[in-house]
Length: 178
Image: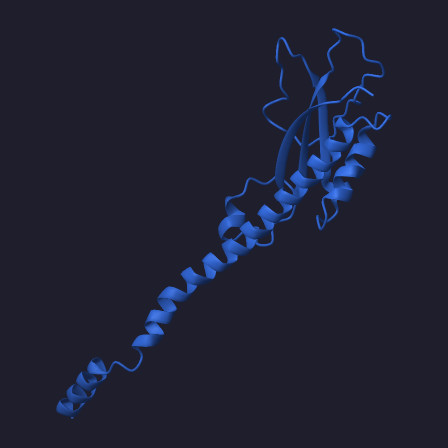
């Protein structure tokens, strides 16, 4: 009886019929994690690119000086209208805008808090030789929910207390005289 059991166990130990399953069990979780991370990173990149595009288009319109000085809500609406496919843009986008001194350059606060701070642009209505246009710094912060907040790349993102991550973009512009 022991001889038959020893023969049976030896035969089972030499059998290679399940080796592909072991390889699959070891490799598949790594492959799946790379797929999930690439999906998350793709959507982060898409959101960032679309918000950058929206800001570029809005700032272009501001720089051209169309005769009006748009206020905070109008600028935010321009950005969101040009940032196609960004979900709840008007609700989740926060703008911060302040003038910068050309001689003693000041910048926005280094830690964006994604709160709504606005200062209206002050376009030059008449051009007087020697008068310089005002340089404006604008920063946008967009809050979003990651697709996989507790897995892989989503867990590495810095999130606020509500679990939302943020995309921050910044630009500077000088409004041209009319």
